[in-house]
Image (cartoon, rainbow, N blue to C red):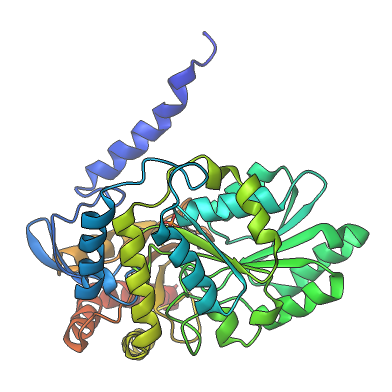
Amino acid sequence: MSAPGLLDKFTPVASLRDALAATGRNPTGMVTERLLSPTLGIIEGRETILAGTNNYLGLTFDPACIAAGKQALDEFGTGTTGSRMANGSFALHQSLEAEMADFYGQAYGMVFSTGYAANLGMLSALLGPGDAVLLDADAHASLYDGCRMSGAQIFRFRHNDVASLEARLRRLGEQSRRALIVVEGLYSVFGDIAPLPEICALKHQYGAYLMVDEAHSLGVYGDTGRGVAQAQGVEDAVDFTVGTFSKSLGATGGYCVSNNPVLQLIRYTSRPFIFTASGSPSVIATTREALHQVRTRPQLRSQIWNNARRLYAAFQEMGFNLGCTVPSPVLAVRFSQREEAFACWHGLIEAGVYTNLMVPPASPDGSSLLRVSVSAAHTAEQVEQIISAFAKVVMPVQQRVSESATAA
Ligand code: PMP
C-alpha cells in the first residue's frame, strides 16, 4: 500500500458530512433563508423562533444602528481596503477605541477585525517562548489558537477549578511571574461563569497576569454591562479585557481594553492586528451605535434577564439536566445519548424553534446537548413558545430516559 497522500485526511471528514446529511438535516449547515426580526427567521420555509443565536440584546435590527451603518456607507464607503497600520485607520476606528476604553473606565482601547483576531492578536503579542499561559480547559478555540501561536508553554487547568489552577501556578515557581491566566467571563456552551474573585486572589498571590474574555458577557452582566468582572466586583484585578462585537453588539470585530500602557505597544507587534484589513466603516459605525444603546438603555439588560429567569425556571421544572446552577442567558440541556439530542433538535425545528445541537467531539466535556440562548428581543410570548416546544418534544424523551434508568 502506498503512503497516505496530502488529501487523504479528508476521507473521514467526507464520511462525517455524509452521515450528517443522511439524517435529513445537517446541523452544521443550517441556513436561515430570511430574517423577520432579531428573534424570528424563515428556516425550511417556516417561521422559526431563533433560540440559538448570540444576539443577546437583539440589536441587529435596531433602527439607530441600521441608520448609523447606512450613514457610514454614504460617508466612508464600503470598506477600508487596508490594515489599521497602513491605510485602514479611519476616524471611526479611533472613536470606537476611545469609546470602548471610556465604557470600561480603562486608559486604553484597541479594536481588531474580529473577536477571533483580538484573541490571537493579544495572546501572540503578550506571550512568547519562555512564558507560561494557564488556560481554562473549556476556553474558546481562539484563546487556544492564540496561545499556540505565541510559542509559550501552555498549562490547561480544569474548567472553573481554582484548586487545579493553583496547583499549576505553584509548580511554576519563579516562572509564575511570567505567566498569564486566561479565562472567559460567561462560558458560552454551559452558561456558567468563572469564579473571578478566587482567580484574582491567586493571580496576586503568584504575581501572574490575568486576561478575561467577556465575549458573551458584554452588555449582559454587570451594573453597566461591562461583563462578569464588573458583576463580581474585580475589574481592578483584570489586566486585559478582551471581547467581541459579534454578539450583544450585533456586528463583527473584537477589542481589548486595559490600563496597562503595553496595550499601545501591542499595535506594533501583533501580527493579527497588523496583517489584516480593518473593520468596514458600516460595521464600525453600527458597533459604535450599539455600544451607545448598551450605555443608554439598561432596560435591555432587564429584558434579557427576565427572559433568562423565566426559561431557567421552566427548564428546572421540567427536570432537565442543565449546564449551570443559576439562571443564565445560555442554557444547555444535556442528554445521555447523542441520538436523543439529535432527535430532539430535529423535533424542535419541526416545532418552529431553532437551537444549537452539540455532540462529541464538538462539545466541551464530550456530552450531547442542546444550547438554548435568550435575547432581550424575545417577546414573553416567544419565550412561552420555546417552553411549550421543549415540553412537547424534549420532556417525553427525558422522562423515558429517567424511567428506564429507574427500572434498570
Ligand atoms: N471568544 C469567545 C469566548 C467566543 O465565544 C468567540 C466566538 N464564538 C470568540 C471569542 C470569537 O469571536 P468572533 O466570532 O467575533 O470572531
